[in-house]
Image 1 (cartoon, rainbow, N blue to C red):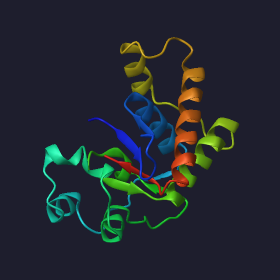
Image 2: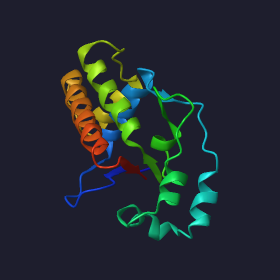
Image 3: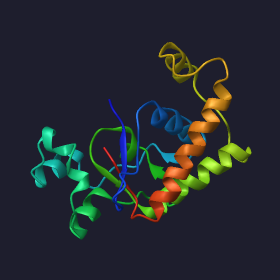
Image 4: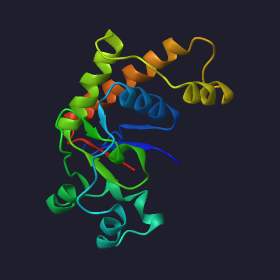
Length: 166
């Protein structure tokens, strides 16, 4: 599974992807910022089929202009405005993270970094990162850097119409 997050608006290609996303989402989940039970009003396959997206087209699709109807379908809000539906971030379907959801994530990253929310990275994620040579024994500093970058990304995207997660 690959993670790609791209700002909705702006020509500079503001993106975040890969292991950085996994680390940030793991911390966000543990801090209670993701709603693990929220489900979309339509299943992702139905949405992709409805808009005629083939697997090889999905990678380029978010960069095209989208209609309000498409943004509504892909950007459905979860039931709790203080949490972001986890399924919008953890799978390879296309979802739109709204500006309000971006701010929940950006503020959440700040709260984790300041100690107002729990700080945790699962042993499994820690082990995977070390095995890939991505971090050394200074994992907490690396996690702080990744969370800060994720928070900055989300805050910037809040002013750019949100971001596409795919």
